[in-house]
Amino acid sequence: MLNKGFNRLGFVLLGLLFLAGCGEEEAFISEVTSKSEANDPFQTTIIGGRTGGAWSVFTEGVAESIRREHDGSIITVEPGGIVENPPTVGTNTVPYGLSYAMTAYAAYIGEEPYNKAYEDIRAISVVIPANYYQFIVSADTEYESIDEMIENQVPLRLAVDQKGSAGEIITRNILQEYGVTYEDIISWGGSIDHLGGSKTFELMADNRIDATGDAVSVPSSDIIEASTTTNLKLFSLNQKVIQAVSENLGMDAGTIEAGSYNFLKTDIDTVNTPAILIVHKDVPKEEVYQITKAIYDNFDYLGTVHEEFKNLTLENVADIGNVPLHPGAEKFFKEKGLID
Image (cartoon, rainbow, N blue to C red; front, side, top):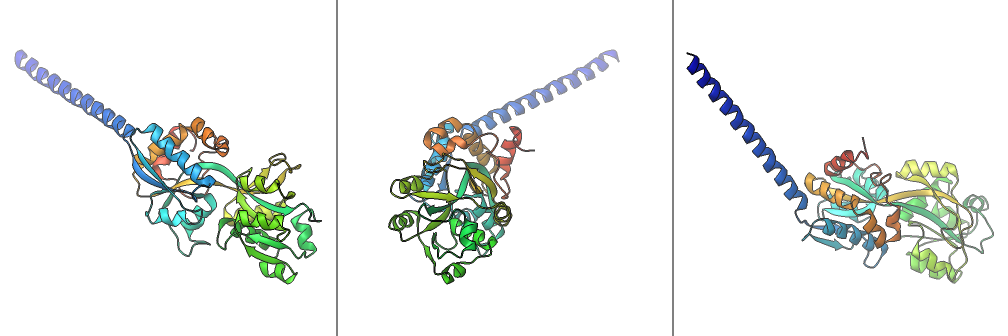
């Protein structure tokens, strides 16, 4: 009887050891698989900005960060635009893209300039922390604020970007908060021209445009170049307008510091929005996790790609605005303690 008891006990112990060994083997296989996935190369596409522009540089910097962390990855960068990219990503025509946080959110909820909601857009990471709205006027202008120009119903020759572009929407919303429309400016004897940055500054140098406004990086290469041939000044927005526009468009209050341009002697109060990397919701969680990690692990490298990347920090990399985070990015940021 005693021997039978020992035999039964032996079988039980052997069984437990076998199960424990299986568990360790499964854990080892799982760990090896996880490490393999973490180092696997990617083949994907990111849509950025126009060829040769700053956004194409930003996009290529993100793509190279992924290549540096995942040998053999094929990351294709395609030209795009701030407004065009969210629908392209939202329909999974291209899985990844750059956009302003404000335009990505407008696409997500279906507000201007979009006529439908692209609810499959998700956010990954901030790329460029702030693009500041800059209302630029010729230094020959006798007035010292937007408020003063509006109060005096100045016949302003205003250049804005194409209708529905980010800069144009911001400009129109700012004027709206001052109680002014494009038609009002025209009725004062002014004009509204839809022009790109380089053409605007060319006409400003010829004294055919008085002012323009757009959301761009600080310092903006276009503004620096324009300031070499034209005397310029920037106007602040008043605090009431800043608050209203921030709420309306999902932007943030911000300050352009004195000295950001050679001609800028005082701080400028305005609104800003980050440029973010967005992704379609169906892109696998592990892939997005690894891409988020690649950006996080390459802050130093990105700082060598473009001066604006030097503003990307642990404090702002997860401040993506109102677009929902992709679960892969959310997992990474939680692991790093950057979000709750």
